[in-house]
Amino acid sequence: MLREQLPQIITETVPAAEARKIIDRRAEATPGAIRCVYPCVIKRGEGAMIEDVDGNYFLDWVGGVGVLNMGYSRPEVVEAVKAQAEKYFHAMFNITTHEGYVALAEKINEIVPVKGDKNKTFFANSGAEADENAVKLAKAFTGRPNIIVFSGAFHGRTALTMAMTSKKSYAKGMGPFPDGVYRAPFPYLYRKPEGMTDEEAIDYYIAKLKDVFEEASPAEYVAAIVLEPLQGEGGFIPAPIEWVKAVRRICDENGIMLVVDEVQSGFCRTGRMFASSYWAEAGCAPDILAAAKSIAAGVPISAICARAEIMDAVPGGVIGGTFGGNALACAAALKTIEIMEKEDFAKKARHIGAKCLEAFNGWKEKYPVVGDVRGLGAMIGIEFVKDQAGKEPHPELVSKLVAYCAQHGLLVENAGTYLNVIRFLAPLVITDEQLEAGFKIMEDGIQTCM
Image (cartoon, rainbow, N blue to C red; front, side, top):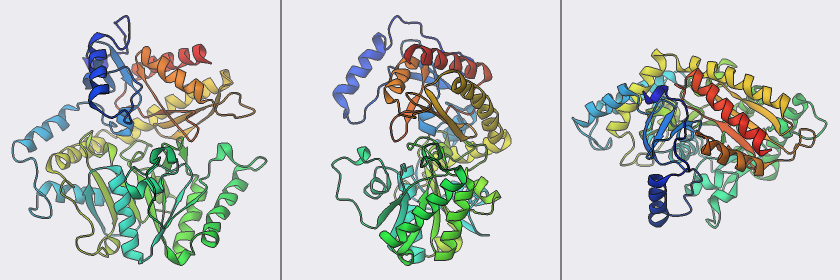
């Protein structure tokens, strides 16, 4: 059975003949800007495994970039989508109420860790749409024009979310961007100012956030502070909980909404249903939550959640859209969440994360090119450097490592401001045997490429 398979390359070259034909067709038919460096053309997927069109087996540590926490082709989700498809594919929620939308909103309202007693939820299609709509909510509720985001942030590729995203290679030539988006440094403790302790660094980053009120936008004009609880494209950098507590206090003192972007970190990835569940446990829950990716096991849908008083402040017609809360996606999401709760996927993430940290920290002890290992649950980054003392980023090594792993049946992806981080986002149904096989390929790659 494919879901139990271990990685195996059976062809002499990768990509082999059939994959090469399709990759060549891709080059002719689709934009080169949507680039792909992987020699893999999927035929089918189950669990954490892909079989390509030439019969090679790849272990997937990327998971559709965080979309496949449930794994490929979970039978119960497949059946839920089939059952819904036999009734109707689509009913626009502005026109025809369908129960799946309502039931999913009720479920999300129950499980989100946002501040407040009564929650409301609506749906869009992508993470970028969720983030943009979260900003709309904050502006509608506060009546303010500006937002604060952070270095290392990635929020999407719409006009607003390109402005919110830190790395401008994602927005090259796309300006001018919407006004009223200001940026503060994110607490990247591995690269904190030299000589500071972590505690001193947190105070430093809090002070830099407050500087935005003086240098860019007075606090009374700031609608929201938007942040990822664990930065994705920025390099899998967790927000220190003491810093989050301070940000929550700043928001409360100034009437600012705290918006959490859980597009990549949500749905059990970090060892809780949401990464901001850790915030809630520490008394600093967000006001608005944006989620997407793994909500529906690969069917496109995103969710925007907040307490009722925030949601009800939005004028009619400002939020919504044709495909938001599509019936097939709602059916998939309801079944996905049901399985995640029943089988305790958050516990699976903690188990996987513990095994990864043991392996990756072992490499840190053995190989001077492994500079830092960090993350939450099964969302872990390995930062590669030219040497541990100097911490100079080593993106060339990471590029070689990505290519080596793919040639040996393991799909991994880079991340980080300097493209020197390998991210771990394997489906949470990965087996221990598959994990060990992936560790072997990756470590062989480090030894070969460094």
